[in-house]
Length: 334
Image (cartoon, rainbow, N blue to C red):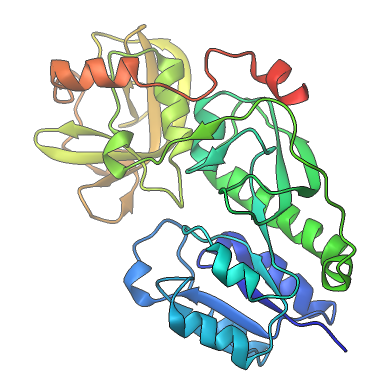
C-alpha cells in the first residue's frame, strides 16, 4: 500500500521544497496552509496557486489541531505530516492518528535554537555557522529525534533575506533526500544531544533601534529584521522610519542619532553610539512604500532622530540575546 503525506506550511520558506517534491514526482496528497487572517504574518504565502498548478488537494486552516484539519487528514488517508513553516505545535492526538506521525523542518542546529524567530535570532547572535534540521515531531516542541541536518557557514554581512532564501533551499534538499525513507518508516532517528537553548518570541516592537548603541549592533539589527520580517525602525519627527537595508561605514559622524552627509548628492547616514555612520539604502516611512532615502527631503544633515526613552534604552541594552554569553562556534560544534 502506498503511504500518503500532507505538506503543512503557511510561509514562502516552504515553497521551494514543495515545488521540488512535485517536480520529482513525489507530491503530497494534501497541502495545508494558513487562512487569509494570517496574511500579515512575516513571509505569508497562500499556496493556492502552487496547489492549483500541481492539482493538489488544498485546505486552509488557522489551527492545525482543529477538528476540520483532523477530518481532512482522515478523508485523504494521510499517514505522515510534513511541517515546513507553521507557528503552532502539532498536538500528540493529531500525530497519534497518523500511522507514521510527523516530521518538521527547523532552521537551526537543534537542540540549539528551539523556539521562535530562528532566523532573526541567528543573526542577532552573530553566529558564524548554523544548520537546518529535519526532525521527528514530539510532544515537546523541537525536541524530537533528528532525521538529518545540513550545516552551512554564515557570512559576516548575512541578512535575513539571504538567510531565508538559503534555508528554503536546504529544507528542499533535506526533504527530497529523505521523503522515501520517511514514507517507508525507515528514516533515521538520532536523539538530540548537546546544549539545549530555547529562543523567545519576538514582537514587531522589539525592532526599535537604539541609536546610542554601537554601529555594529545597529547594523546587526537591520540585517536580522530585513524582508520578510517587519524591519528595524527608529522614530523621526513622530514618524516611524524603518531602515530596510543599508551599510555600516567607517565614516564618523556627529552625536548619536544625528543625520550626517555620507556621500555624493543627498546621500545621508545616521550616527550610532560609537560615532560610526550607518547609511540606509532603502527606508519606509510609517506604513508607506519602500523608498530611496535620498528622495525624501525630510532627512537633512544636522537633524536628529527622536531620542528614545530611558526605559527603551535600558530594555534594548539589557535584553537577553539567547546564547550571547556563550562562544557560538564552541556551542554549535559541541
